[in-house]
Image (cartoon, rainbow, N blue to C red):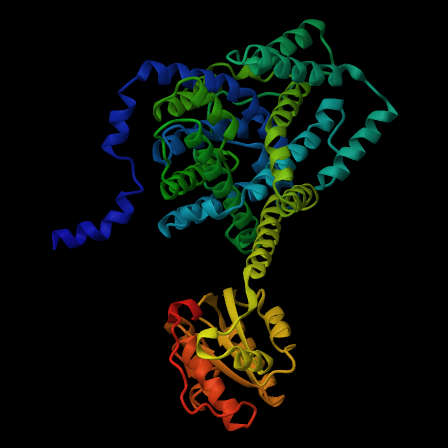
Length: 574
């Protein structure tokens, strides 16, 4: 009884923190505390910026970084993952804010969290490995472009124009700036971005994002520049958890956006965890537990006014590079940000919006790995098409549609490549059974085809066209032993080919049909004309002898009073 209960609870307990996690956090706490502090310094301007970009304000970004960052660190499937608001999620949230308002975003986040927990319970994390690399690269490139375009209004110091299409909003912002240009905000944004990019290249260990933001804030305050608008007042502390935003009447209309947010959170979090694995030796995340942790994080964040969260690739990379060894680093990052929320809110509220725009512009630029893009484009034409199409769809549509389109196109191109592997080769008949004169006559009236590779819907009709074009023969032998895969479409096409050849007076024989193929062929009735008329044989030599008997009976070949036994191995002609 006890063992039965243990087995029933095992799938659930495997998603929960274990004693091993605690032991790991005790190994080198000093390194983890230092790494967490560094990540917090890097994450502060990003959390503020993504909160502002989402439309819910800087306080929403901070709340997400603290609450979601802590819960995902404890319950997630990676020891080194750092979670919080991200640019990719911001891209999805902007149209949701425009259509449903802030309360709609909070409800969507809660629903997405529940969906992620359900995905974890269904063990869906393993399917991330099937997302092709060109889709991921195109997705990342598209996100980088969208994040950069989203910063244009703040970088130019103009109010954000109406609209939910980033290309349209950006163009309108440029038009508004052109009417009465004020270069102050643009100067702040460009200066911050340049300091971050140039500084990181020369001294990568220094968090230039916070250095640049502090410098920009000091200059703006000292000079009293009205054009450098600050982010505004922030509450000193986190709000009391509440479900007051939840409108049960609107749940039905918010399900589709919630699916999009959950899909993105799963994709980006598992991708970020994989990146962390690749940057270390011996690390391997648990994808299902990662979904569970992200689910809990997204259920809790809206209760504190936070936006949906995911694993953050940039912050995770900083965490790994600064020597993090356990979850303590990500927990420290969340704790430091919580201290800032409670103790330094008045100072944070004075940061210019243009400075945050500069941080996000630099982040967008750093997201683009030129080397990876170049390698992907050079790999194959299909990879280049998938990458470009995914990036364009991300920019023109939205992220979830972009990933779906990329996956569909990648799947179609993969099927096309697999279908091309199927070959229908005419093969020489066994010379060991016949004299040279007999073989010449056989070759004139009997053709043997060996089908190599998969015979399924993607290439079956091409196979039918090739097979039914045979001419000037009396017997066709189909050698089936090398068919690797067959589906119902392939079986129907084979049946159709047999019937079409039969109507032309051509006898079709088959050899080497495997048990798995037999089930598919039998299900669509393709075996009926072969089995009932005795035209199916275990080996090709038997089929050849049957073909000779048929031609002799029809008077095409002279009768052989003493047929010879084949000296050729059956395996060679199957």
